[in-house]
Figure 1 (tube, rainbow, N blue to C red):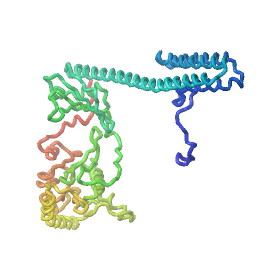
Figure 2 (tube, rainbow, N blue to C red; figure 1 turned 120 degrees about the vertical axis):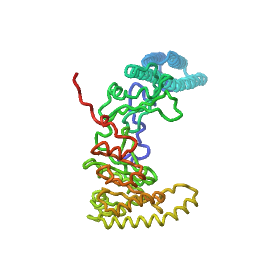
Figure 3 (cartoon, one colour; figure 1 turned 45 degrees about the horizontal axis):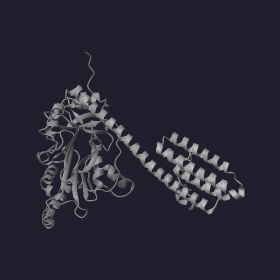
Figure 4 (tube, one colour; figure 1 turned 90 degrees about the vertical axis):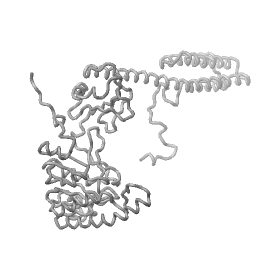
Length: 475
């Protein structure tokens, strides 16, 4: 039987277990005192019939008073609370003893009810006040403990930066920005006024070792935005290697090409994405580097876009097969790639179709931009962006390559983009137009540093030592 099937009136009042020390929320000491006074009033009323001696009431009251004092001391209650509880029980005991000894009258009962009402109000009110006070004390202790932990962390950072970097007087911010991915955190550190982020450069490996970070983790420094003081540094600490296992793909929900299309995660666990509406990309990787897997992942992101058409020039049929074969071979669903061109003639036809689309859109787009008073028209389901993916550019005929260059040059203003892949970053794979007009670059693995220089002009080849574990040396 589920919760919704339980008949009305039979629901479980609380999931908390019953305890016989009267610590359950419904049985507070204040309410227990009030109930005891009610019992005393009832005893006084039936005394003539039951012939209850006054000594019995006095004995019961003294026992209850002692039990209340012992219980409050065991709870660690304040003295005023213990005195109030004992006074309430003694007042009730005195009245009950008198009522039993003299037989209850109307005046006696009125006095008893008054004592009961006053005692109940005081004790129940004290329960509420006591719980609020206890909660406040608990919060105070929590803050004190937290303050001690913050002070210890700040002292630890100050000592670490002094021991590793020789910087004295650094102060770590008590608020740590923990990354949503759980891969690490960012710590804000204020350096002495005459220092800046440059004084920390070169100490990444030493700090990572001192922090006992695993392989794949690390430390990096950032100076922050233009409004951040020069002596403030943000230290990003990666405590988990995000590349050490399979990364599940996000939910297959519809999206838009107006947002970056994700294809993986970066070191801090955030999603890496490309703006495929406004720019194409060049992906270079040697055989076995994962280039086809990359294109499949990007393709999955593109086919989820409700405002994009995906055209593939894929003469090897490796890039498009996963999106077409369920329909082509088994009749399941529909083809997810809008146009897979798997031979040279189809590629020529695709170039011709793209030329026609570009020519037709130029006038229409100019009118829409003027009507809506905007500079960049977003993709829409009724006017979708067209993204053409070219697998292994070198395998394309010269006339198709010329058509691709034309699309890259003329399709930019009408949301027609081209992305290319290749085995090498050489002129055989990357034409002049691709190199000049394709800002997105992805380098998976190349054969030499000169290819990286071409793929990332002006930035040079990265130091590959940062991607490998240093060899142990004996001295």
